[in-house]
Structure formats: structure tokens, C-alpha cells
Length: 341
Image (tube, rainbow, N blue to C red; front, side, top):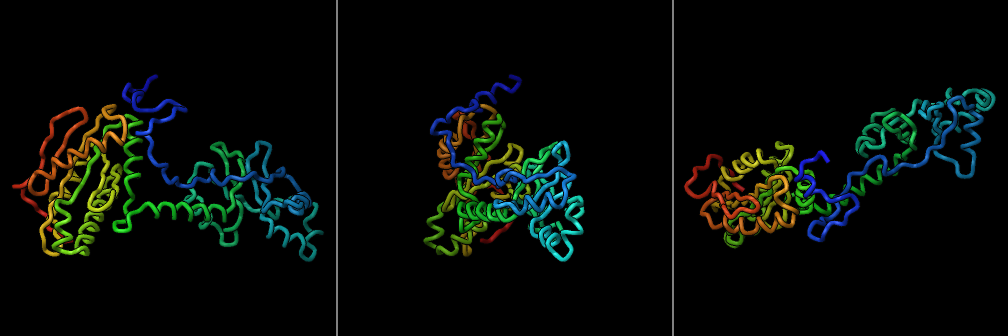
């Protein structure tokens, strides 16, 4: 009720099915610890070694046991292999059987359920080398035990996520495809943010390939991709996608587009000594002024044509619902930076 009206128009109601033009491919989700959660085998914190041995000797024996206090907060953990080696060794049973299991236990590795899988792996690798295979106890914000995760499952999940992410990257620029820009635009629309959607295109790129060769054209695209990737590292709110060929999509905050345009248009691009110009079409989207990524892409198409009609490296800008197109850069502008692709 307290949210701005624009946010209500943009954000779908809970449980609502988005219309076809609002659907975007599901993002490759970064694995979270909670995705790998298993039930924990727990015993009271004052359990004896015999209690632990009986649990570990069961037919469906767990890989470890967690000792919890009366509030279900983990106090110690036992690794199955190390515990059984100790308890079944010479005099092991006689020395430990009736005594507290805590004497053979370790301080538990703890992590919150919302942590990322990469944070989990950092926790494990920072631990003692002898404990890198131990179960990690998952807790909530209050420190209560929620379950455990196995290191092998998390490693497998991270590898699968990285492979899935790599499939979406352009083999030429190593930039993500249009899905990344689509997700970012939809997120900004849903939260009622102001943002800029931009389309970068090389002028007469076919002529570049025909006259300088495909290798020179590839080098030019790589150079553009490197420049955009560097910008996205410097500008924390900027997202860039390589749509294919010589087309790139950019999503950024309004106060970032000037830096982006300067980096792209103040550069003398060339391919094997052949001068090359670029066109930048930008759509400034205010809160609640555009309903979807599909609409943004539809409005950018004629803007790109308008930019390409301006001689030289050009920059045009417009807003949803307006017929006015501002030509901010074009032929006759001095360029300061030299760059060969």
C-alpha cells in the first residue's frame, strides 16, 4: 500500500501468470546452500560415544552426527569415518564408549541457508585439510539447526551451474546473450526504477567483413566486447549483452549512460586500418513508463535506424511515449582516443 503507484503498475500480483510478452527465459540461478539441504542426524549434546556408534552402525547410516543443545543449536559434529576409526581401534571402545561424544567431536562447520554455494566452498577450503569432506551444518539466522549439506553435492551443483552459464555466453566476446538484458530490464520495471536501455551497432559491418576480412571483423567485435565488459566492471549497475553479430544491448542507470557513450564514441575504431563508426540508440525509461522488455526492444529498433542515419559515430536518445528524438552525437564531433581493433 505504501509503494509508489508506478511500482504497482509494473509489479505482477503474487501468483499471477505473466502475459506472453512479459515472460523471459528463467535465469541460470546461482546455487544457494539451501538448494542442497538434507535432514541432519542429531543427538543431544550430552550423548555418549556409544550413542553415536549405534546411530552410525544403522543400515541407513548417515555420514555424520550433529550434537545439538536444548534449543536445537549445533554444538559439535562427528564425521563418520574419523569417529569409527577411533572407536574401533585398539582400546577405542574401552576408552570412549561410555564417555561424552563431544570428546571425539569437532567444532561444527556452520553456514546460513541463504549463503551462496561459492561462499560454502570458501568455508570448506578455509577449514583444516583433514575436514574438507565433513558435512556442513546449515542454520537459520538464529543459529538453529536446519539440516546438513554434503560437500560433494555442492561441488557438483556449482560445476553444473557454471556449465549452464557458459552455454549462454557468446563464444566471440564471452558476454551473455540477450536473456541477461531481458532479466535486468524486467527486474528494473518490476521495482519501479528509472533506467536506460541502449542498443550498440557497428555501422556498415558487412562492408568491414567484405573489405577487411572476417578475422578483422571478429577482432573489432572482440574489442567492442572488451570495452563494454570493462565498463560493466567499473559501473556497478550496468549490464551488457552480446545479442549476436555486431549488436550489443546495454542496460544501466541514467547517470551511467554518459560514461558509456563517451567510452564508445570517443574511440577511433578501425579494422585493419579501415575506419569504423558505431551507432548508439538509447531509451530513457522512467518509473512506470514502459511495461516490458519486449516493448523496450520494440521502441529501440527505430531508434537504432535513426542513429545509423546520422553520419559518423552517433548517439540518439528518446523516451517511451515521446516522438522526439535527440541527436546527441554525430559527424563533426572531435574524437580524443585512438583504438585499433
